[in-house]
Image 1: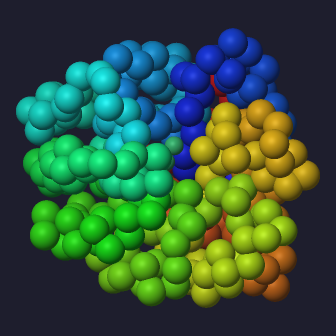
Image 2: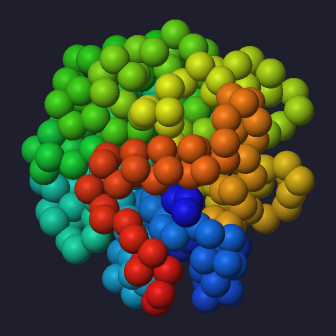
Length: 262
Ligand SMILES: [Zn+2]
Ligand SMILES: [Zn+2]
């Protein structure tokens, strides 16, 4: 059994045939998925999906690329995080690739999310792109280690992975690790110990090989897991059991084959 630790099932590409998407997920041995929030405007859809399907949980947070919607406060995030099936705060973090000019607002918002996570005692889902140094510095300053979490869709170097793991964070790989040209990232994936490893799709984007460029969905997380088992030269079953256990430990979600029956 496998878990997709990060996807966006509320996005229209997937929401339009959610029942079939979730059926294919189960058919592919993926027993559970975490539906990740990117805006407060869309959050009710994320919450409703988690409420409707036993094998989904969700997060609450505002993505660093989202500028126009409601700006979250600590109180607002903590309030929403008390909703059933909310297991983490995020996705949050820094993204200097998509945003230019003044990025103070991103750093302020990131701090708000870490404070909310510490206040409600839930782990963080962190997105970082071309901003690794600032991301790690803010994690340290705001004591993110108190709650831990995951560096999602990891594309950074080994030293960044190491620093995050020292703060108790997990490292999650997406379909990017299957891309032919992602050689440095494949090396990082080889080195991340099984005890710190998670896998994800980030669907509907970033479909792994052999579906690169197509719509992604949670069932495809098996291709990420298979690729990492090849990179590490270990059994696929070892990736399945480690990543499922890590997911269950981090997000305090009990996984069983029962979650398939739904
Ligand atoms: Zn992200
Ligand atoms: Zn995402």
